Amino acid sequence: MTDDASLSFDRTDQTILDVLQVDGRTTMTDLARLVHLSQPAVSARVRKLELAGYITGYGARVSPQKLGLTTHAVVRLRTTHAQIQASLAQFDELPEIHRIYRVTGEDCFVLDVHAPSPERLEQIIDAIGRFGPVSTALVLREYPAHPIASR
Image (cartoon, rainbow, N blue to C red; front, side, top):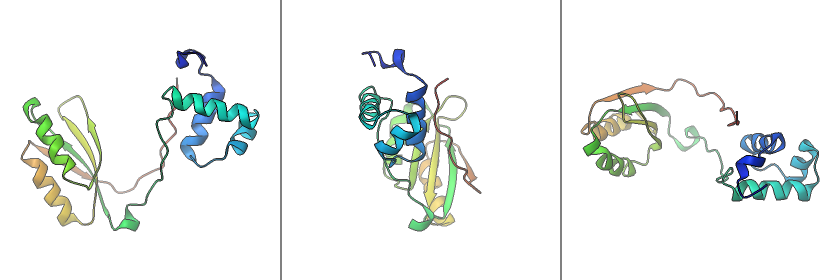
């Protein structure tokens, strides 16, 4: 890869990313076998993908249900630009907010919330509702994510 990693990104790099997104614990030996390269060559590619910012980290997927967080909701907040920073500060105070997306359109934020009960979800909605209208949808089922692919 050159200094501009996007110029030399190829199908093998995408395959490496696909595999690591599904299982970040895949060994370099197994990854090498899958992409038909040597283990040192794959290790070097992974390191270059990390340095170039394609791979931004590794982590465990945790079951919210096992942690007692059985109420999953997507919450949308419409607020004013003057309230953006205050909204973000409030979100930081609510550990049940798992992901925060600043979005375009009528809403300003889309939040992924995992709460232990409907009552706690109500408290969260009330806490952020002071910044503007809130829309809430309960998540009935979550399906596996697809790996992010380049086009």
